[in-house]
Image 1 (cartoon, rainbow, N blue to C red):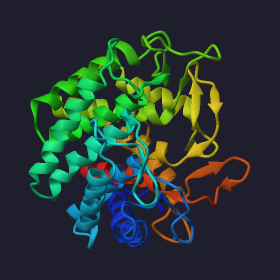
Image 2 (tube, one colour):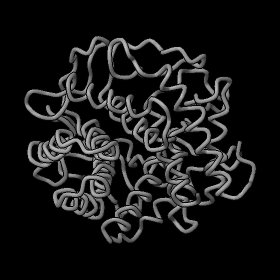
Image 3 (cartoon, helix red, strand yellow):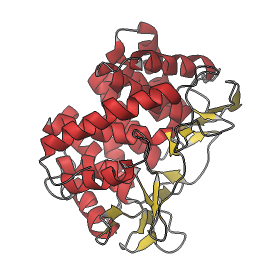
Length: 372
């Protein structure tokens, strides 16, 4: 798809893929109009893949995706976004606060865990839903969810617990997405509590998550935020390095907070994570830059593109990032994607997970915002 043209042309190409191919397909086949919510994945022929559950994170991510479609005038997208909001609020609400992680196909809760990662995406979806028009009930639930997280899930060592009930190890990932949600709320549902949450999470990154010893962002931590090194070396993910580089740039844009070293994260991910033979990002690295897992997935390339747009070259060329993404999007049925690439067998013919559409959509939006 990408062929070295200028970024404005690629931005138009990316927008066309989203608006003309992906959104119509997922509106037609990815919304479960019989049982409610959204299908977890589509097979490569476009039929819903069998799954015995529905995840909160998928409902929230697809609500965001269809909100972007609604803002672009895609027929049926607004109704699908409202469908997602209703499913979250009626089927997945937990009686003690927050939202349950999973329902069965019929919408009965089967996993009542309040998971910080999932709740961050609900907050993110609620923030963007403000763009659909004024809804005081959703706004009130947005504030209530923020209060639940900051009160019921606060950890005495800083940051927030992984879930209710608590579990270990602690991870940077849920905090990263909570920052993403706080930034979305600042932009679309302004309230002082979201500015405070954003500032707190940026400070947490600076003081606890970023490891000055290795100069990278580890994935796993103990209860007191000590870095977990079960094999003598901490694990890192290039995709998350790129995502933090983007989010810290967004924090600077929306809050005026500048954190040194954010571009170095992207540079580390690019230098050690990019396979020069394929132009694709590897899955996991150790903190010394050696490869921990060579598996390749689509989503890190979306975060690479976003980081490349804001990192003044530290994350490389946005055209190279979009070119990598475009390879995953070349499927027999337009609007789907290849989720994984393997050095031995190439692209795997597995279903396209609904959850990945959030990453692609966010990358397309960022590309359009910077280079329309």
